[in-house]
Length: 85
Image (cartoon, rainbow, N blue to C red; front, side, top):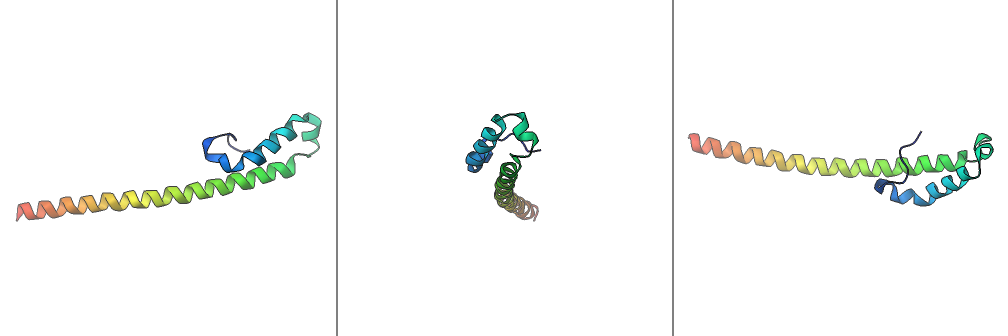
């Protein structure tokens, strides 16, 4: 199974997803005999690549946020130490 196909996160896979939709539109028997399997595999590969790219991007953003938060806490700790003597 795959997630909802036509979302903002999957813009890079539009062409392959459209081909899968066209294949599925050819009818039940066409799908039943596996005529859409190769296209579905291509969709899965594309979605995986999109997800991995998105995950890497999110990880980098989280690291930057974490560093910023730690820097703020260091500043607060230093200010408290100076205030307390």
